[in-house]
Length: 304
Image (cartoon, rainbow, N blue to C red; front, side, top):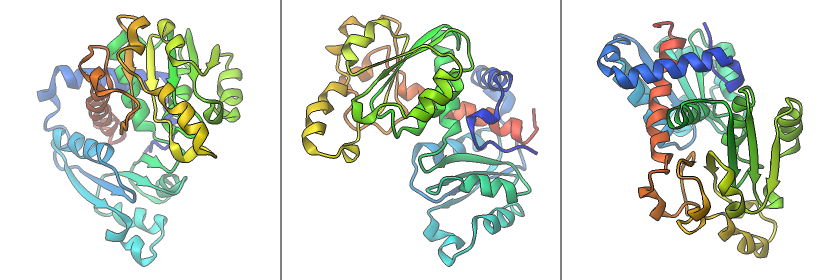
């Protein structure tokens, strides 16, 4: 029995296999529509979520399975003080697999150590969100036909963005990857990712504060929100916030085959005018997340 807590729990071969399964699901949905009949997914979401929870639930239903759901700690025995370990042991009596989101970093790991069924980390605080990374990888693969030899621009909050950190960890294992890190000084990629992943693995990267200047060299642009609450003073935020709003004008020098990604939710960092641009991939990411979660559920349940 296996769980997925961190994207590094999966080897490159396993990532490639999940992508292959997801692509087959897209091509042959009927082949998978009853494959999990009789299986139950428990979604334990102790903090708000729209895309991730619904994506997991849609994934299980489309595999022919059923869903048991808990949305919010106040509607579970956690409100009475029950431990994560006891919750995991209890839910293991009812379901075949668990997807858990929790505000406390490490909570899904504790659940996995105590459950007798697989546990999928659906986000734990600022720590990990491995299934978002799976969605990102499938999107890149479907848009570019490969996960190697790419220049990837990461823009916005690179300091606190868990999706950025996980994507770097995953993509650093493929050949010919280069990163362009686009952020204000206040939100630069933290040293433990820069030194512990990029420099340790010899991955080439550049740092800049100029989004528009970086665009012409990018194959992928991964946008994130510049968060007002991360700045120590309002002046710095006001000075920088518009630099990281992607508009059609800023895209003038970008490649015709650029893939524009965003983990969502979007606030104002990508103009809605770009939604109709064929390079916009962020809503494709949402759909790809469902397919990768379907593939992951099949693998962890050992159905495939």
